[in-house]
Amino acid sequence: MISIKNIHFSNPSRWPFFYGWFIMVMTTIGLFVSIPGQTMAVAAFTDSLMEALDLSRNELSVVYMIGTLISSIFLKKAGVWYDRHGAKVMMFGATLLMSFTMLGMSYLIPLSNFADDLSFHLISAKGWSLILLVILFFLARLNGQGIMSMVARTMLMKWFLRKRGVANGISSMVANASFSLATIGLAYFVSRIGWDHTYRFLSVILLLCALLFLGTYEEKPEDFGLTPDGDISKEEEMKGDKKVLEIRDFTYDEAVKTRAFWSVTLITSFFACFVTGFTFHIFSILRDAGIPWERGQDIFIYCAIISTFLSLGGSIISDHIKIKYLVLLAALGGILFGVGFAFLKYHWAFIVLNIGYGTIGGLFGVLLVVAYPRYFGKRHLGAITGRNMSLIIFLSAISPLLFSLSKSYLGSYQPIALLLATLSLGIFLYGMTVKDPQ
Image (cartoon, rainbow, N blue to C red; front, top):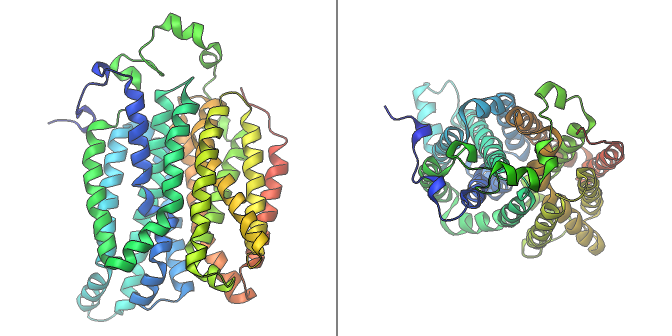
């Protein structure tokens, strides 16, 4: 019986150029097709799901929260699974499950009615739709935002050392642009072919990509007699960069005790929390601010432009400056995002929000890829990044409900916006005290 790990479309050692650059392309594709499990994708379906399933905003927020919270529990082990099974097995399995999840989303109404009949109406069709949504959101968040994103980024780290910043910069530049424009693109498809057919389209794309990843995702260059950055000798490698060779590999327990780990983890988790709530309720937020969708969608366009260039620039300079400074800049972006969001009805705030959103969005991918191997080495990278991803998923789980409660009980989204801006300020002050563990 052929093992999944032994399936290769080609031998990386026989490529006319370094296979790591192809890994960079596949990483970008992996991040791109993780979008259906990200909040910016869910946001495009929010109003359609509420209408089709007769759900209130709070009800949809609660089931999203429950599904995401359950996924955060499992995601704590995902890093360990990655260290044990490798990128190929994890990415293929996660993408395949995502394909089935999107297919299930497209048949929510028929499945709910079938379950209602099967249970002899002990639970209503709406009740079954809530149960199914919890399960499907759990699978989408675990595999999309969690495993697929973690595997793609972690694999890329292992193929590069001195050129890690450049490789991540190019990948993040494309991925950030795609993420920023995802809501607009999916909203267009929903308006044209309907939410259920859009989900089916996504299911087909994910299935094809699962097969692609099966033959192209490779764990590390050493498996094929190569070395990070290219097929160079050990002597050349030692001459090239002594710092790389002197990096100490921290264990998971050692890493989580450092301020460096928590500075990166807090700012990336903060971004996920803030942006999740913001994009999940984007249409409601724009209506409250008196901004039509035709103008409101410019937020994602401006963010795409800013984050695209900042992710490339940040990745390149990350090889030459302390990670601490990128954390501080991202936290500053979070402050601007919060202030702009709180006063969005004013023109100046619209500009401030875009600058802040683009800044923290552009540095998010940079920090996830570059910071942890720089701080803690590569041996236990799966477990360390898995802990970060579990917190990201947890905070993104409660975020939509917090936004919804702010709107329902405090009358607007401004209180939650100001709270998150204050938290970002706290992360900025905390980041100033960080020292490099190496």
